[in-house]
Structure formats: C-alpha cells, structure tokens
Image 1: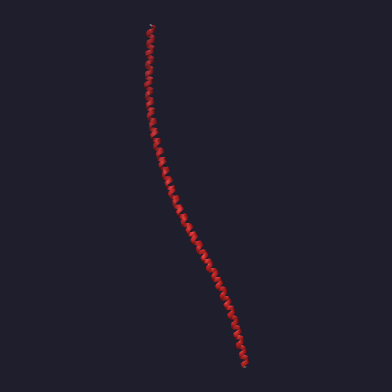
Image 2 (image 1 turned 135 degrees about the vertical axis):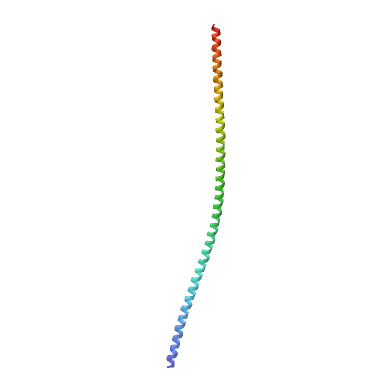
Length: 128
C-alpha cells in the first residue's frame, strides 16, 4: 500500500513538474509578448511626438501665412485706396481742363467771329 502511495506521490510530483514547466513556458511567452507590446507602445509614443511636433510647425506656418495674407490684403487695400484717390484727382483735373477748354473755345469763337466781322468790314471799305 505504501508503494502505491509512493508511486502516486511520484506521479503527482511528475504531474506538478510538468504543469510547472508549462506555466514557466507560458510566463516566458507572456513576458515576450509584454516586451513586444512595450516596444510598440514606445514606437507609437515616438510617432505621436513627431506628429505633435509637425502639428506645431504647421500651426506656426499657418499663422505666418495668415499674417502675410493680412499684410498683403492691407497693402492691396491701401493701393486700391490710392488708385481711387488718383482717379478722383485726375477726374477733377479733367473736369477743370474741360471747363477751361470750353471757356477758351468760347473766347476763340468770339474772337474768330470778331475778326471775321472786322475783315468783312475792311473788305467792304476797300471795295467802296
């Protein structure tokens, strides 16, 4: 009977040793999986940091472009306003020149008529 118990203990010990080996193998496999997962997490964190850095750079570039756009818009508005002022000044000058032309035309017309009348009178006198 003792031999049977002893045999049972040996079988139990062998079974436990086998289970222990399986458990140790599983622990090693899980440790390897954990190391792979930790490596992947670090890789993802580096990618996130790079993406965050790129987002920061793009944000700065966007602000620079917005400032340049505002500056350009402001310059264009100033140039447009200057052109409008130039047009206004030139229109006013044109109107003044038109008035002067009309006045000169009237004077010249009157002068021309007067001269024609004088010439006609002189011819009349000469023919008499």
